[in-house]
Length: 145
Image (tube, helix red, strand yellow):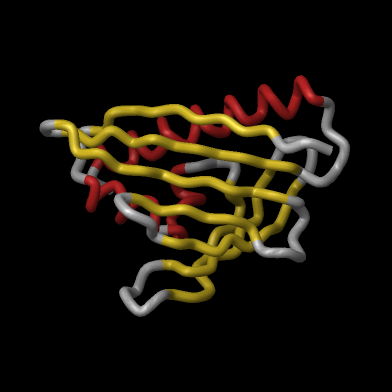
């Protein structure tokens, strides 16, 4: 089965630091993203940032559990799933570019569910995931919560 990928950008009226704070507040994901049923940090790096986190996600057609490993390249954050979860591949990144009084956030996402999902549903799901992730991030970062 092939993976599906998507990318999108959005301007958020917040600093890159504020946006990174929201992205790395993994335990709060279920508060602002309904698909996340559970989210918890299991390891942190030397700077206190999440390096591994576990998730339980309602993917509508199936509830999936997976663990992501995080890295912090350049001006953003990236992640990829570890072996052993319910999904074959989840890989993504946010890159932050200051833009006046806002920040342009570029989001890249790739998934291979590892179980049968028709191609048209996979493609639509990736579009929805990317769009919801960016809009949820924008709302959370701009709210100051």
